Length: 350
Image (cartoon, rainbow, N blue to C red; front, side, top):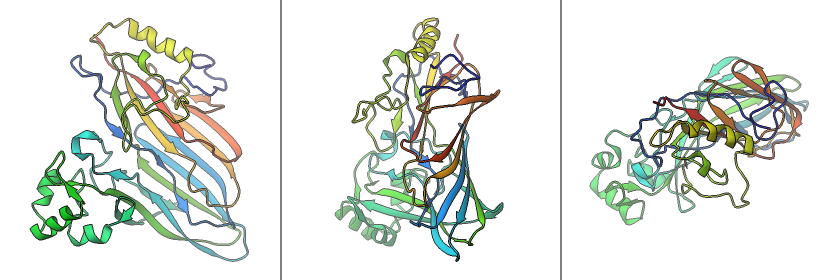
């Protein structure tokens, strides 16, 4: 029921007015896209005595905000490891093939910020190198190469020139460095996470809040009618562009009404004009449910921007609550799918 019923509950495919991106030039290629990755929330060590009383999730183009309330239902304090994993980054495709657009060019590329009971906390940051399923962090770190990241000054070849030649040769002999986009292209996956130790006192709520920048993907659209929703429209880092879901399902629940709305606008602007670009956001809900029972109260907010833009997602019961927000509240929530937003973003056309 996308495209109608705004102000009422919106069904599985939601037509929302949301977000704005800079204009697309007429000479831009319809295949131009930037990579993105799904992000999610914090992960606890498995426990059967800590409940998640509530989770408030707000998703927008600029940032993602998550607030939790946990309670230890036992009669004794519980200390557990809590982690926030950043998306895995496979460095082997090189610097240009993956077309990453990081929210922040740094080890903490999501600019993660954390508060516990409203007090700011500085967690530890861990980086690991994974190669063919093996942890090769010690080898890469001993060679001084753990900092070979896409945002490093001079990129991979420039960084390689700072390494001991013998150490670099050992990495190459082990298959950890190969020729690619650069002569010294890392072959490992960079796995990064924040972590901290959290104590949950018995019978008391603990509020955990974190904020980070959205890992957003962009793609120019030559013809919106070519989108079938079964594959990623832009580039999901770690997947081949255009890869379809194994089930053939529409990952965005893109319905006929939404297609008609977008196609009607496109028809007014013949090529080479591109009235729409695409933006994609993925939020992972289905992993690491290590607390006791379901989420007592789950509240989702989608933050909109420019009214001429459109987003489609698979979610039931979204209600327009203000000029720029759509919300949904679910009790006793057990996530069974991740959140994937496809945003048709109006550019400035002649």
